[in-house]
Length: 271
Image 1: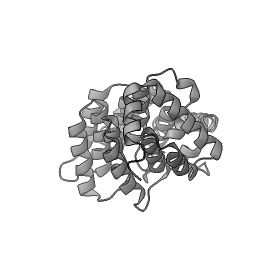
Image 2: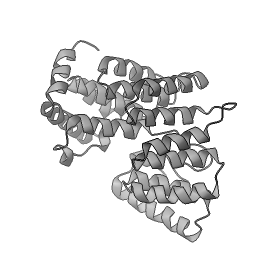
Image 3: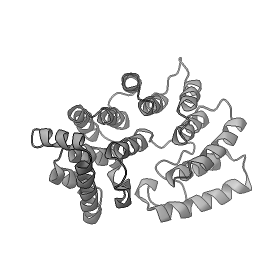
Image 4: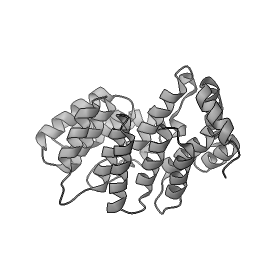
């Protein structure tokens, strides 16, 4: 989400920054009943996505201690690996998930989390294989299809990624996280108008979370409509965070002439 961006990253090429932000969002899946912590965990009062890095680090240490006491604890391993990825410790997250996958080789949820850890660590082809093994043709899982799409997008295989997202939508129509992923897929190929269409559809669905709204704010901002983007972002962020994000986008937009031309072309043409 835009709120995850930091001013100290301004020297990074904008298209790379957008791709990284998009990938982070594309890879996100909804929480589930068995222990994946994207969302919240029993010992916390707030969704993890709303925590600062300091707060996430503290929760990670607590869950890590629980995992260290019993490395065979499936749920603790899943939670710890997710928290490690959220705090940028992708190599360690992959090591944890590799052990959990060895202990639970046929567990679809474990395989899905292992695939996400592989993708976060840059092992994209391996991640795609892991996600494929987790999927079963007779009982296809929309979350796995969405995760497959995220990995394909990272591999630059946009058409295949979008086919995976549409398969996910066939299984669970109008799922906001998948519509958001589809929108972000178009962002990664700089089709901002189509991206915005899918994101507006996503945000209109029941159950759309803050990440979807921040994705929409990002796409609107990339089209140069900064005030509108800031208004969208303010619904989830503090005024200071929203203003900082818009300032960041303006700096990034100015550093990449192609994005700058695209924003100028689209500025004011859509609502």
